Image (tube, rainbow, N blue to C red; front, side, top):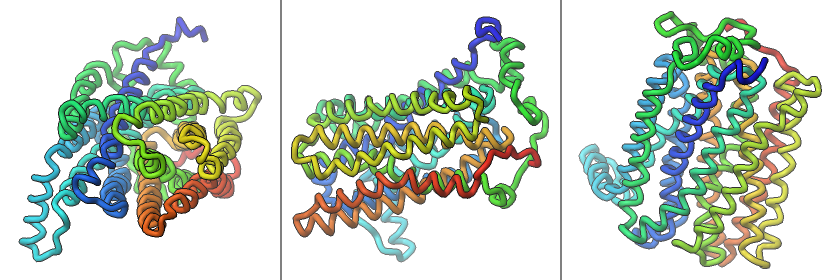
Length: 455
């Protein structure tokens, strides 16, 4: 079909998902960029910081499970509004963490429970609220992509909106240290957190399900549904099929996605939350010093996200079905993070060596992410996509918790011995090898493509 005849409104939706993901990562990265100064101000150890970040990941993990279910029940439009409202309020809460911590400790004291330092309690609670809302972003975005794109375009569309994570990661070091230096760390959380409310207005105006979308022509709707093996997404108001988590867990496809996320999500969390502290501990870079290195690193990841989304089309155009094309692309991508093994051995040359090598590894993660998400919409019917993504997100979040806690313990242990570089070498090795291990598990569980049509 001619693209002009088909129409392009689906790319407007992709743009909205891109900006939502950008805001999502802006909000979650503020803490990591201020971590060195906040650790000094409040006397946090690496373990304390790991506990604060793990609180986000732990709540995010379990919220992802329910987020998928809520999105499938409420529909993409209303669920996204709810999610971004909660996470924007959670982001702003960080500015009032001391007051929040005093309230949390007051409740703990009244219940006869052990209290924790006020700053840690306040930031942990703020991270928990942020995580509760942010858990809705990816299940909702993947569901919207499944609604608005045929299978052959989904990984590319996913790669585009997923690159919003990279843009958010680039914008954060360009803005957060400057705002904090000018008006204090509290205003950094407030200003960045408020951006989500502006996006919410655009979403309310421009999004409807394809069947109800008046801005989109019939030719584009037919194109979107052209490769559906099952019925298109129901019109609003019509009862939707319901599938239990237990039934979804009975499919190997669910476990392949979940274990792939468990093995690899923690790598991205580690890069996102620990890189500023790594540059500070190893090279003495902090505050505005980290703006350029982090901006360069996360700019590199945009190439991975968009390029990784496109990569499977090379194999699909050569005759592979979407799943086989995606798995071939993911195998190629899984070898790229091995370069991270060189970050520590050659880091003595310049801080730019680990920045570039880790940037390549992070770029590979985004390429991997664009494809692993799309394996769900390749095989599951649209009405269950949010729930499956939620299950995988929970497993990914728990993998992130384990990796973060391991990192905090290793850095305190080896840092106390004056050998913190050993701790980073261990963590970089885990990050480098995770993708090949994950691909092997996924391929073992689902060796061949099989679309699920009995849900």
